[in-house]
Figure 1 (cartoon, rainbow, N blue to C red):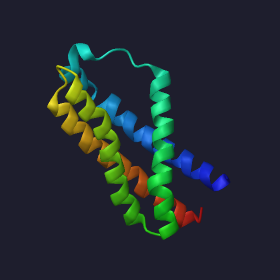
Figure 2: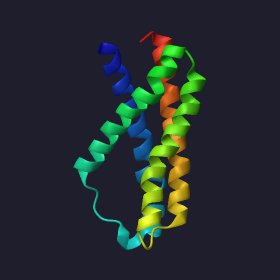
Figure 3: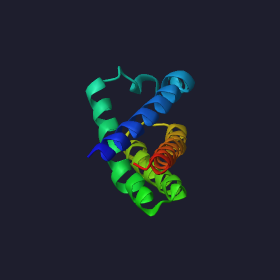
Length: 133
C-alpha cells in the first residue's frame, strides 16, 4: 500500500506542477484569447476530481505495468497514448458538440495531454525503478 501511495503522490505532484506552469504561466492568455466567452471561473471541485481520477488511471494503465516490466520507455510511450486518448475525449467531444470550440485548442490540448502524461509517467516510473518502489 505504501508503494502505491508513493507512486500516486509522485505522479500527482509532477503532473500538477507541470500543468499549473502550463495553464497559469505559459498559456493563460492563449486560452482566454481562443475561448473568449466560453471561459468561466475555475470550479475547484471538478478540477480536483479530474486530477485525482486521471492519476488513478495513469497509475493503473501506464505506470504500474511499466514498473512491473522494468521499462521506463514503456511508460513514456504508453503515457503519451493514454494522455492523447484522455485529452481527446474532452477536446474532440467539445469540438463535436460546441458551436464555437476552436480547432487550435483541440490540437494544442492533444499535444499537451500527450506530452505531460508521457513526462509524468516516464519520470515516476524512473523514480520507482531507481528507488525500488
